[in-house]
Image 1 (tube, protein in one colour):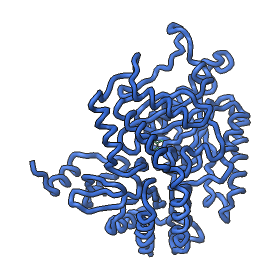
Image 2 (cartoon, rainbow, N blue to C red):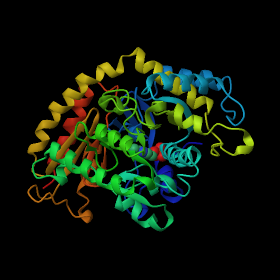
Image 3 (cartoon, protein in one colour):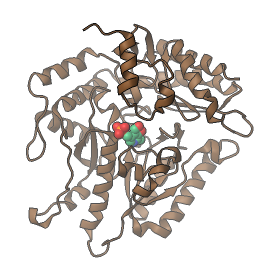
Image 4 (cartoon, rainbow, N blue to C red):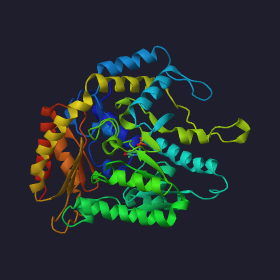
Length: 453
Ligand code: PLP
């Protein structure tokens, strides 16, 4: 059947309900329908070519349609696509677990698979709660059933991960369905301090966390944090030493630390994992997005020997972790993840990032002088450009003006796909992008933001 652009656009609007999308507004515009990808570029059904400035929602590592990743997938598909991990094992999931343990912080020795960032977080939350119940059923009975997360936190969209979410727009409506969360301030230096004073911001946030822990730690199973950068909140970059400070407080007050590296893992912040930059060993590490380099849904929750051992016992003792998804440890996804990790090593990807990160920083400097740019935040290959109506008061534009939407449409017309998060324009270039491509991406973005009056 010959598919026409017109039919596809019509059927998209008629049948597909898009995530995080107001469909009334979506249906007023011409949809962007992607047909294929090649390297750093996406192509729509009319053949238009765009730089992928959001790494297809922060997942792509080596570029689209990558010959070696394709081959790994084909090779595995020629053996088997899926068999269950319930009561059985499979080769790629064993090899991948071993590899993940080798490359993540030393404290982490066990891997529990799932299929999205949200489920990797659910698992960490449930494991943390059950761990305390198993560790000391008398002391902790009915206690340690709460979690701390940061203001503006985003950890996914399932009920548990929404419960630890702190973004009013996304989470407010669901509050009556959720378990109780304790909130601590996010290190949002631009909004919390007068002159972008990172040290003052860090001290303020760590003091507030310590006060909360002092009062409530007996009730708290764990603290969940997006290390170094709160992505969905608009790329809130934490001051140096903040993550380490949080780790120290968690240890002091007997609270487990869950590092949600779903967005920041696999090179995004310039090191393989963000925790490495502050020498932090979390009790749980959640990874997803970049794990398969943008090929297939796969996630993992890593944890320590201490946590794992608490769950050991005879079947009738019911210490088992009763959780598992149908596609847990899927062979196709694990095979492509293994190839992704192999490529990261073979291509020297992490070492290649420093030059790109510095280049980006240099390209971003002039953005600060634009009349409606309030703040420019960068950590590695993650960038947030905060748009304000008025620089002095830091007031954003009213939502109905759709300023950020106009910016991304302008960029799209000029050949780059980027996305806003509220008033923040986000750049998440594919890690394998060349300097020339980064140059073009930032130029297109600059010109788009320049149009704001
Ligand atoms: N945690 C963080 C830090 C994220 O940024 C995201 C997604 O953006 C998630 C969890 C949820 O991941 P998923 O969309 O794969 O469920």
